[in-house]
Amino acid sequence: MSDEVNDDKDRLISLPEAAEIYGFNRQYLSQLARRGRLQAFKFGRMWATTPAHIETFIQSRKKTGVYRDDISID
Image (tube, rainbow, N blue to C red; front, side, top):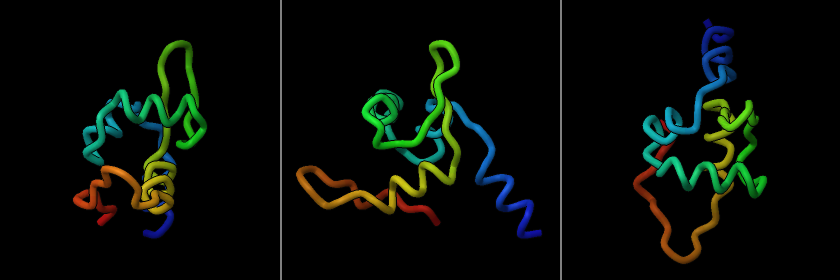
């Protein structure tokens, strides 16, 4: 069962899909990917990432400026 959970966290998802799942703006995730703050992969003009990479980014955020604390991994 734990392999299924790991496989799910490692599957590729588009940034718009990630934005919908985690409550971010898709342009914000795209900007993070271009700047290297979010580990993502570019296929042509489309960016993709994994749920694990999104969760790593969420855990690495620092409370500065406008900080959304309503985004959680659970």
